[in-house]
Length: 357
Image 1 (cartoon, rainbow, N blue to C red):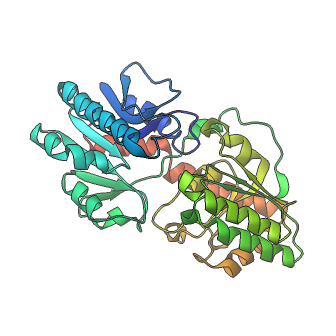
Image 2 (cartoon, one colour):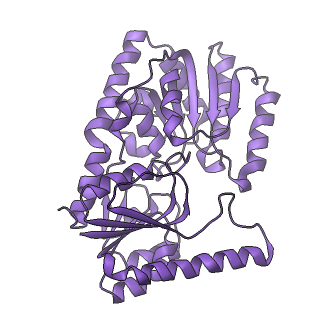
Image 3 (cartoon, helix red, strand yellow):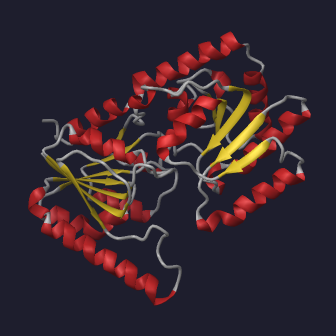
């Protein structure tokens, strides 16, 4: 079978969406042909049965204002319609990853041409536009029971898709004792401010630690990043809490290998892949996501938005013996490998989409 994928970025090192490169590779094992239409194209190395078509979004983003911005977007829109038209006889099924705009723009055309549309969207937020896009879809996929899109009758809950290949040739590094990692973009939705307040409380209890924050900051959130750094300095934690830019997706394994604990305070409904990447690589991961409340040991769950409860959970994990930490590490890793591998995800997706050759 032949698949059209519409996504944001095809760029293996991208710190946010680099993981999707491996998804395409895995899909390619089950498909005769894959066409990928993306907003932006960077570094990639895909199988011979995959080719990509870029809509031409500049690496630095769209122009910020004026006629240049409108012209650039109009050109990209024209390219999109050109690509889906010229390739219409080369695909049977459409898989849209996250961006509902693709369906809103082309859903009627795809339906008229007899194409089945499948939509992956996993986020707590949504709107009537999400609802409208879903009307065109044969199935909607998400990973969280609390995702906005889980309300549709055609929604299917899916594995997250942890790439087990990253466990091959792991770097021989020792985890720094009492080291904490926060990995992901610096945006208010990630509740980074809550984590900083909890770390401050942790210090008041006399618990020693170091914390590293790695993540890209979207332009609209630069003021938020500055407030975070100012708050850390105000609390006198600037020698033990460090901020770094986002790193290429291909280098995150080095960060996981160096840190004992990973904190993810994203709200329920998102189920960040970072959670599963960290667990799969042996880190102890503290989360507030209710999806995991009945799936991992209670010690690793804290109440969403509750600074004191996160502090409590951190104190408990940091107080564990090395043997206890290793045992919990194996439990979390086993959970991810058995339930959320990329192989399981790709097989389930292509089976549902009737693409299994």
